[in-house]
Length: 243
Image (cartoon, rainbow, N blue to C red; front, side, top):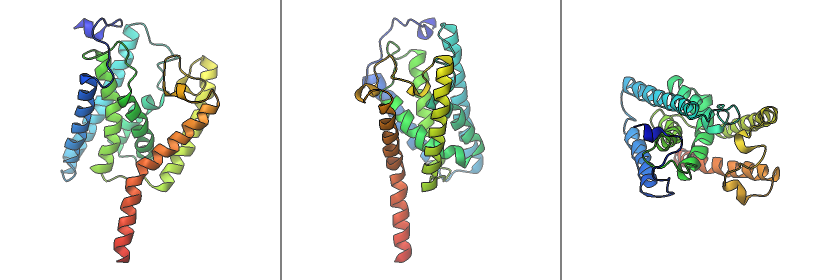
């Protein structure tokens, strides 16, 4: 059992779009379709589902910190909950418990967009299936997406145009704060102070700080794509009213 929690894992490395990767993606898709079937369930059942998802998110994140500490990798430069997905693990679980609309807006736009990239291109390196790190990554990022989809499909939440504005303003303020945190402690949370040392999609963009503008543009496009289903829904509703 200890082998699957080893910091220097000798087992199979993670294989991009390999059987384990595709299996994890398939499991997450199946989970979301299954949860969507509870749209007309009782409030008691929905409450249990929300609490279950929230507890799994919190326990999984705590386990991630415990594991890093156990293998000697926990540092304030890398493990503070300041990366976007780390923040949304805690806030996404809180959203599920409290049904908070404000948190939902950030979880929907930033959570789905950010965690989707992490699910499709996870930075797992040597930690292939069935290492703890493999499961932790897909549970964490997968349930960030699932939490936002669940609140939308089952609980009836939805974003608005003003939601996008609030998310854009809030994210930019957060980025400025994190930039100065990075300067103070020598970290690179949000990858806002420079490219990460490991290969990433940022390698395809211009040098710092110009790539930040590209990141902003990509973020806007992602938000518009995520809002597109509601544009269509509102257009159809308006058309029916006219007719």
